[in-house]
Amino acid sequence: MVQTVCLDENKHAFSMLQKLKMMKRDDDLCDFTIEVKGQEFRAHKNVLVAGSDYFKAMLKHDTKENQNGRVKMMEMDFDCVKSCIDYIYSGKFDIPDGKITDLLQVADMLYLEDVKVAIGDIMGEYLTPENFYLTRNASVMFGFDSITALCSKFYEKNFMTLTLQPGFKNEKKSDVMDVFQSNKLNLSDEEKVIVSLRWIGENTANMQDLYDLFKIIDLHQISGDFLNTLLENDPIVSNDLRLYKMLSNPLLTKSTVVSKGIPKREISQKENINEPIILFDDDADCLRSYNPASHQVTKFHNEKFKHLGKFKVTFLDSYIYLLCGGRSNYRLNFKYKNSKWERLADMNVDRGRCPTPVSHSGSIYAIGGLDKSHNSLKCVERFDPKSSTWTRLKDKPQAIAVAALVSLEDSIYCIGGWNEKGRDSKSFCKFQPMLNKWLDLPLMRTAKSFCGAVATHRQIFVMGGWRNSTMLKDAECYDVVTSQWSALPPMLKRHDFPKAYYSGGCVYVMNCGSSDEAERYILGEQVWQKVKMKGIGKFRICNSVSIIA
Image (cartoon, rainbow, N blue to C red; front, top):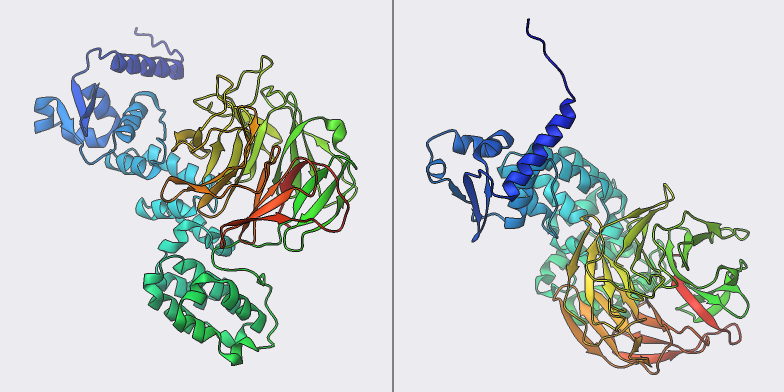
């Protein structure tokens, strides 16, 4: 009588996959070559046939590829093909930097449905305004109906925010018109004007499209104050005679219609200027609020902070987050006058006195720092406010400390800082959390650490900092579209550990020190201007953060 012995099938399957993977790595009994744009790697026919219907159709018949033991996939991306073959051998795959759509194309060609579904789930789970257009386009291209439906709901809920993203400029005129005429979004006529100007952007060669959009906007339902502000401040309006005449009609500009709530000084591609900057008053041990529009400083919150020691600060939702020495971190719900600093779960890594934080897509990220021997660190981790937990992510390829971090679109940009040798660096790179990948970018013009940085819709401004123990006045700007750095006029003075903010068409630089040493760079005039804060006497600023009112 035959007796069947059942061992652990999962353990056996895992062991077989591991052995097959090692055989592929060592070119052990490999009988097939995959060539992609001049690069190639070896594999086993039987494994490819078992894992992909594409290879099954190719290798179970007397094809040229089967006879030669070689296939050329010249239209595909090498990293993506390799990632899919790795999946066949191991059940795991990497998403190469910035190539999620390319990977979907390869997985679709190889009939790897599980890979396509997994990528679709990732794209849906991490849907943000920054990656919305990429996700929506991929969902339509590859038939992810559930993700397409999710994108449609996201579009309706976050439409005005999405109009600030670069991908909005690629929308068809007919789609924008459909939005204007739809009852779902219920846009005011003022909002339609703003959307139209954002959509045309710098593409002024197609002004006829803008005129067509304005034809379906009831300009008589727009306040005179709003139109006068556009006429004075918006470069698209002021530089186009036909549009200027259309909007400067006295019957419109003298309208007494009450504004529907659009910020009066909203101009093309500019954010709301009503973003207060919170100042940490080291003298009074309290928080103050600075309004960039009025330059007024007022008391913001009475909760003391000096007992927490040295810290770096960032902002997310209704909370101000402090990353302190060691692994400790705190947050304060600033909407409640009696709120206290809340101790959060410790970070996984002791980052010394230099933990650099940034908020991005609903999470807090800590990158780099110094260990107990004052060596720069590579470690990266993310704090999830929903679960109150820190999670280690892929290390940064090069160690860094005291770098500046900014969030823009789907990436976190890491700027300057001390490298692994403790020297001021020109380093400039970005981290893509959705892909858990790092990508090197063109180096800055000047090596620096402790610099201030801020991002607008397409530019990153970097000001001041230290180099070789000397405070800097220089400023430079990176254009994310052209991938080029350009020099800006130097600041009026040197700032100790500067923090930078963008508001109302200006870049503000706040000093860690006296309250009367701030200045701003007026983008339209390309000049620096001293800022005089009002409403309170001099005090010492030890840190600052911008929040959304």
